[in-house]
Image (cartoon, rainbow, N blue to C red; front, side, top):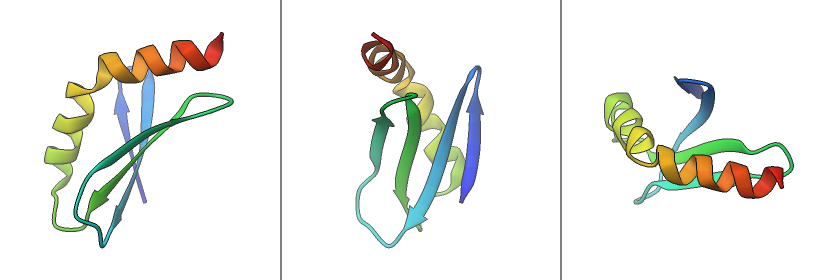
Amino acid sequence: MLTLSLGKINVEVIQKDIKNVHLSVHPPNGKVTISAPKRMDIEAIRTYAVNKLSWIKKEQDKIAK
């Protein structure tokens, strides 16, 4: 398991034997996880997370309210 820091947001990365990337924001504290295929390199995962930052922040705001 690996943790990426995207500014103030920490993203827990779990690489498993799957086909697609799954991004989740978990209640109650807005923890962010990405499940990614083993074949995907960490820079591709980081790029994916950066592209989803606005969605992640929106979901964390929903959870905080």
